[in-house]
Length: 376
Ligand SMILES: *[C@@H]1O[C@H](CO)[C@@H](O)[C@H](O)[C@H]1NC(C)=O
Image 1 (cartoon, rainbow, N blue to C red):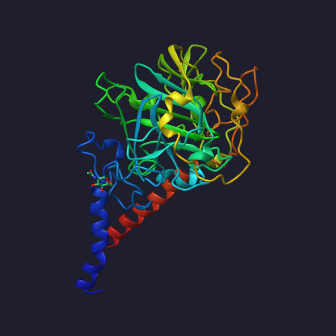
Image 2: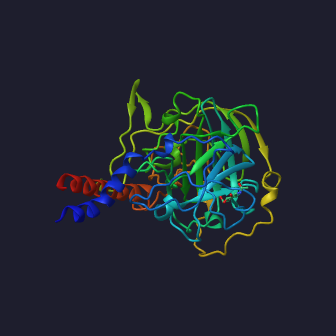
Image 3: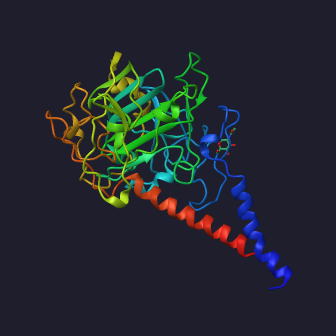
């Protein structure tokens, strides 16, 4: 080829390489709230396309069509979950495009309709705040029966799930007008339960408490808790163990989550310890979520909703078996003799499906770029 033809052909390659050189992982991006919030935190157009929504959310974006991707975890009456844009969605299909659904207006986001949340426990510990609960997930656009998956600010391509999703909290200081950016967090949702842990950005172990690599074993192992359906409470608590870390016969071990290619996870060699909690204050849901009363849920899409009643026999024994959120991407458990109500998900429905695909997708695209450079 002629020199000029070569240059024209090579230009997109250089552009792609430049874009890659400037790539910044989502967890390395810092924006003070509210002044520094960009329109979109993610400006990359790699394998998964661009960021679906936006981060600058205000009264003009507020409402049930909002595509706001800036979430908050402040308190039991003021938190957001990541949930789908469109009704009847499966988490594994849309984890990169989730938007913020919040318990009250004021964040420029969607509002979780009244009656969606059927039990919530907010927990503040030395290193994180965590909100765990039960819900009718169809009211925030999840398909009935979807056992869901995990959102976190990493993902195989380091752009986060959702892409560009940001989280803020006023729970880590005394000034309730100071919303700190939460760098490490994880949110499991599905099986009519959720858990959302936001790690204190000043904590030395934030990345461990909010570990993101155990995406197939759900809330029971990533956010062990004693939340109960029908109960709305805000508590103080001790820290959990780091997800995946456990002690057997005095020896500290780290669980290795098997790759999905090896098939469903049928057993886990430990039960996660539920840390002690204290100072719980209980509330009525109407007093917490009054502002949501006027919000209409999306039209029901199916009548086969799994009732949360299968998970209510929670005890405080430390068994993770029947805890809320043991359903999202978790496995059938036989470790406790007390109840056996956890049914476990179909093994194919975990967020890991999508991230596994993303790994191979990103690798082949980068491989193509570099192969092209060597050829030229
Ligand atoms: C409100 O949010 C929209 C969408 O992000 C943005 O375009 C607009 O500039 C914002 N308005 C203000 C006053 O910040």
